Amino acid sequence: MKSKSKVITRRCDCGCCMFVIEKSQWKDGVIDYDISIMDGYYDHNFNTLWGRIKRAFSALFGEPVYYNDVYMNGEDDFRMLIRDMQDLADTDLSDNPDKK
Image (cartoon, rainbow, N blue to C red; front, side, top):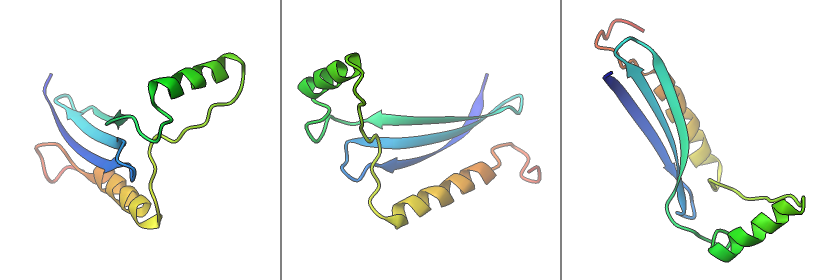
């Protein structure tokens, strides 16, 4: 089935990953949102093979494992993401521009 879609992205300030939100409207009118985090490369020595092994052992022995998937430094980037998300929610992907 065919669909139309619009995507917004925000790159992590350290450059290691990207926050992606996609809005799709299918031919039958159903609207879906896909939210994902795409890894670009392993960074900060926390996501290396050795770092991943250490986290696995911590989880195995019941210790909490903390990590940050997408890091945004400051208010401006976050507020821009919120505005873009609202614009995405308001976007009409149908063929009929009068329909909201």
